Length: 450
Ligand code: URA
Image 1: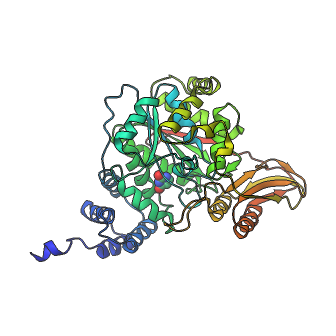
Image 2: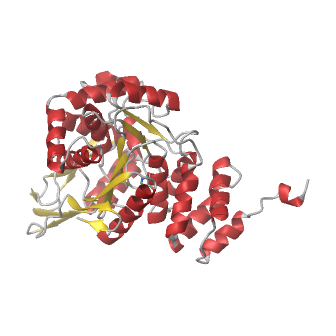
């Protein structure tokens, strides 16, 4: 055996140092780190150091494209060309109370699109679609490719996580980023999202790029940069793309926490639910129908989406998907079958006035602290915990009135979350002057902003 067969030609320590010093990595170097980590040859500590160096020093467009491509090719790319429906998906960059995927997949499928959705778990202070779905007793997000296809063919949508077959590199790197403070990099987010989405065999993708205090990209400028990066990456691969820059300066809807969010999803699918969540779902669904060529205008797409909700067709599709993926479909009509926390605790307003802000990252972190997310890779998520907001930005409050109710299972964690949520509220004598729009702007082609 020669020396070159015994030891890898590219040493991770050299790649880490090169990135730490601001160098541009070659394809071979990126492949060595990503493939080495995915196969288990490179340990967590070296992958973490490389992720942190990447977060701090950034990547060129060429490096980002190679990283996306390497992560995509770590697994299988689905070929769904035998399905006659247009394959369209939506992905969010992550938020607090952001449960739109659970509404959008059945709405789009009920409207004739195929939605092969590969999602992620909670990341940092944000919630994850997979954790929310798993709050439905029995729901299986770990289908094989053959099972995934079967669900998709039967009801028009299927929702799973990355597997050993599809985007395994993202599965490992995503879990590591979650606990090493290496989420907030546009390059890593782009590669993570686009590698999963390009593996799905879709024709079109709608991106929900969040901005504000609860988003990874706090400023609109950074959100636009990320959106353009992803739109460009998708278009290069021949996909129809649109990115909506949407507000995440306060939690979306009123419910935060996995099972609680399922309850709110069901409200929206029944034609109720909070205004902001419902409006955003209609807007994103409209873009899915537009890119999927089911409608010719966004307005027509919104009307179609509202009709599919109003007729109950979307709820029926959701019910079918839940049953096909092993979930207890009875939970759809009987919320008592969803996990429930043992205790609740109110957060009273310290003074009268108007809510002028809710620091959304703190609110999301409060949910993680309760056990609704992970602080370490091996942590199990408690599906029952979270909180329900009674007041949102712009609402008037009276001293001692309820701002929020915390759902908890551990006394100590409940009171920590209570303090954190209280601190996240800003209350002043007058209402906020500017109301932030729900959709800040839409980016439909690289560099083109609407
Ligand atoms: N969603 C993902 O799938 N990946 C990220 O890195 C961030 C949000």
